[in-house]
Structures are given as C-alpha cells and as structure tokens.
Amino acid sequence: MTAFDFSRFRVSTLALAAALLAFAPEAQAARAYIGTYTPPPGGGRSDANGEGIYLVDVDDATGVPSKPRLMAKAYSPSWITVSEDGKYLYAVNETSSYPEKSGGVSAYAIDPQTGALALINTVSSRGAGPCHLSLHAGGKYLLVANYAGGTFSAFKIERNGVIGEAVHVIAPGGPLSTEPAAQNPPGQFQRSDHSGSHAHMIGPDPTGQYVIGDDAGRDQIFVWKMDEATDKLVEQSVTKSPPGSAPRHFVFSPDGKRMYQLQEQDSRLAVYDFADGKLTQKGGTVSALPDGYEGSSIASELLISKDGKFLYFGNRGQDSIGVFAADANGVRRIANVSTEGNNPRSLTLDPTGKFLYSLNQRVDHVTTFRIGADGIPKFTGKYMGIGSPAVMAFLPDVK
Image 1: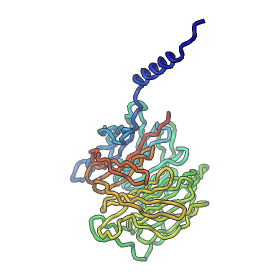
Image 2: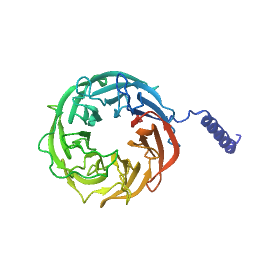
Image 3: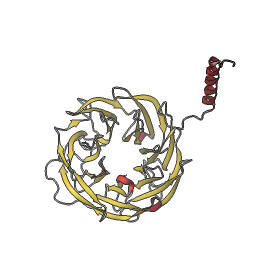
Image 4: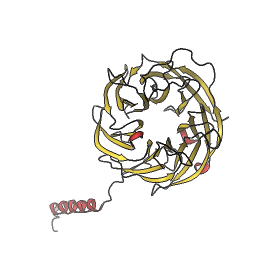
C-alpha cells in the first residue's frame, strides 16, 4: 500500500483555508441610529439643523461612523432607544405642541436588512418637552420623562411594537426647597429653573425590579416598582439631591448595588448605595470640572464602562469629558478630555466598550474617541458631520 504523504495534505489544507478566507464575507459593521434636533414646524428661526433619525455604519477597527443616512423625518427625536431584539426603535418628539401642550413618542419598525425605519404610530407623551425614554425590563412598558411638563409617563407596548395609550402618569408635587440653589458662574449655560418639576430621565435598574426617575426641578430622585397587575408605578422611596443641583442622568454599577448620579446644575457626581429600592449617599459629591475652572458649564450625560471601573461625564460649556475611576471606595476624577466640539448633548459607548462618541450639538458633528487601557478616551482625529446631533443608539447584535 502506498504511504499517505501527510506533508502534502497539510499544505493542501492550508491552501484551501487561505482560499476560503479570501472569499469569506467581511464582518458586518455595527450600526447605530442618531436622533437630532430639528427646526420647528412651519419654519422660523432656529439653531436646530437636523431632519430626524439617521443611520450610520461603524467601522469595527477604527470606530469611525460612515456618512449618516436619513431614515425617518421626525420632529426633534432628541432621545431614542432600540428594543433588545432589534426589531423596533422608539423616539421622543421633544415639543410642547403635540397634540396640545404635550410632546410625542413614536414607534418605528426596523428593517433587518437595510436598517430602514417604518413609522408604526405616535401618541401623546402626556407632558410637554419629552427628553428621555427607556424600555422597562422585558420590553413590556415604555417609560418617558417629560421635562417641560414635569411628568413621568408609562405606556404599554402592544403587539408588533405599537405604543398603547399611557397607563400611568406621575406629576410630582409637594413643597419646593426654599434653600439657596447651587451656584454656577454666569454665562450662556446658567440654569436656575427650580420653580417646579422637570423630569429628566427615567429607566430601570439592572435587575429590572425597580424604576428610577430624576426630577431636576425639585432636586428629587424617585424609585418605583412596576406593578404589572395594575400597570402602575408604585413609589418605594424619594431621595433629595442638594438644593439646586438638578439630578439629570444616572447609571448603575454592573451588579446593580451602586448608582452614580450626574447633577446638571453644579456639574458634580454623586454616589449612592442601592438596596431594597432605597438610595443611601456614599460620601460627598465630586466635581467633573478641571481644578481651577471658573467659567460657566452644565452637565449632560453619564456613562459607565462595561467592567464598571470608569465613568464618563459630559460637560457643556467647559466642553470636556470628565473621566472618573470608580472602585469600592467611591470615585475620583482622573482626567478631562476635550470633546473637540461644542455643547456635548450626550455621549455614547459602542457595544464593545472600545470607542466613545461625543454628540456636539452646537457645531453639528460627532467626534470619535478610542478608549485606552487606562480608561481615558483618546481623540481619533475623526469628525462626522450631522445637523444638531442629540443621541446615538446602537443596534443590538441579535445573531
């Protein structure tokens, strides 16, 4: 019997593998939607230059977004979120005149091949100026914060992604603080409206057991439980922030035991232990601004790394990303990185956690940063032009 030449077989196998790799399709780039601020209906002077919701492809190696493609014309979709299965996108319409003294919330079906958006329906947000929305655990409810109207709204998600009518609307009340508000140096970013409620964010904790709401006007943080039998948010606790601090956005540690709170007016970060629906502040607050900074600035967005070791804090006016290291002892600011733009309305991390994006509203572009091993973002030198960007949401990988 003739001996088998294994060396020739090995060479042939390697050649075949190389040929297959040469013809293998390239890995599909990640996709992300960007919501923008748009001019008011009927025209008129405006500093809003967007047209609605755009789609970009994001290069896996460089993190750089492609040229944006308009997927849906919509009025000021300033906050968006995508369902866990990637089938639906939900957006606020940040206005005070739909249908009357209210904003809107819209549902879209996502084409799995092209990413195109098809409007499903739009309903009243049950409050003026909706600025944030999120999906409750399991995707059964849509939660909306109405800034100008000062209300938190919950909607039932029906079959095929349809937004049902509101099942619960909360309008916080009670006495307002008479103590002096937190002071910020005068300038274009001075904000002192604490005359009533201004709902700024609402979302679930990582376990899905609780829902948290930030009221920037009354300096309060609410914790509720969603009672699915009655479709009502049941209050568990209310925590007071420092007077005039304006709690705006929050994030949780990966284990859900700690909540980090961004305070808009005084540009400071607070840390809370979270257990049984109650918040307990841990230590004092920490400034997100560089030492010695004396200009005007207000905070916008807060992100946390996948491992929970770093936090990223958006500063508008000072126009930087405040970088914090987080551990069992609390947080410490380790850097301030320029956004390379003006007025970072929000920040976004890609699903891998390797890249960070600053949505620079007033200069009509998005800047890309690569996050180093030290947790500090490094500007890649890449700008993506888009009118008045407000928020960026990645499509989940559901393969």
